[in-house]
Image (cartoon, rainbow, N blue to C red):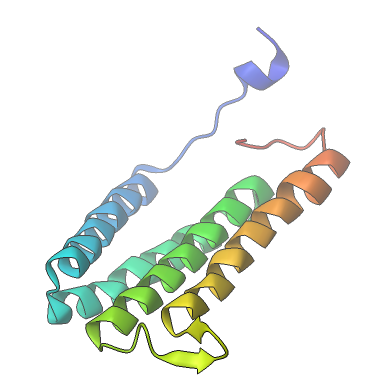
Length: 134
């Protein structure tokens, strides 16, 4: 067993409970989207996003976790924007050229990909000795 395999990444139980609650909120948000339950879907954005940002903040000392958790938060933002655009019936409205309101969600989706690209292509290769969870 090498040194990396011996290292432990411990999550305090309070943090784990919050992460599990986050999954529940996220599932309710997406179920509401699927079922077109506007009030529930819109309401679930707030706790889902809030907890995702808290998780990112709590893991900020481990860059691998921070980058992944920020990407998740941005994904939820993009997903929520897309959901709301469908709820309010503006998802297929043209913004400019052939770009629709729904396609504007690509901005945060790509931002999340860029954060992870930065981590894997720039940060991680320069910090090989640093502890990481991935």
